[in-house]
Image 1 (cartoon, rainbow, N blue to C red):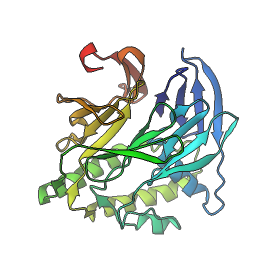
Image 2 (cartoon, rainbow, N blue to C red):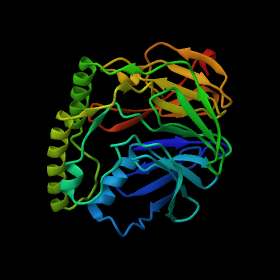
Image 3 (cartoon, helix red, strand yellow):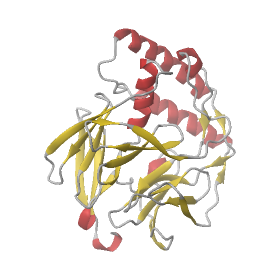
Length: 303
């Protein structure tokens, strides 16, 4: 599950991978309608569509303007979808840089499972900006690309922070971290998948464990870990934290034009979404592993 809300009306979009749909709620939280995803991909079978959507769900859908939202395909593209009708059709919006050797593999399950796993791949982090553009980063360096509503590049925001070289200790820590993430994910969130498909996915999971143990590595640790934008358009840019808490790095705050406003140095996970008047939302899990949305208000000094 992922939640995202954007002005001017404050509607909320929730990605639902089990139903292959987007749920749209009004600004007060009342459910309005569901928009199902239309798959127009005859070259991929059912299982590959499930894998595609499982990857997509982890990035969520982010409203960019009235009736439209963006999300990642889980590989290296940012997609845009029209949510104004009952069926959402997707079109590519921005194609990010893919480091050589990391291109996605599609084909038989054995071909997918046998693909190499890379450590310290530069993440594709992005969020929507007021007016329909986006801010995103796709490299190991501190470089944030800002686009207009049609996807055209407007500027690149940089800070003089260089990537850290990868050491043997970092390699082992990354292998352990990815294995821990894989084994902790007992429910992949695939909904009513047929038993035969679940058996195939179990084989796929075993192949993933082996691939992680034999992981290949890039020579640098990416500087950035996450990126979010506020309702006013400011960028919260989180740098990668120290192992194993890579999601608790310092957060820089920039204007859309690139002016540096300051850094939050205390350990803080990036909010899952921003609201008006300093409100932020975090998706947590309770003692029964059920997702719970916690809403907090930031102190005036860091809004």
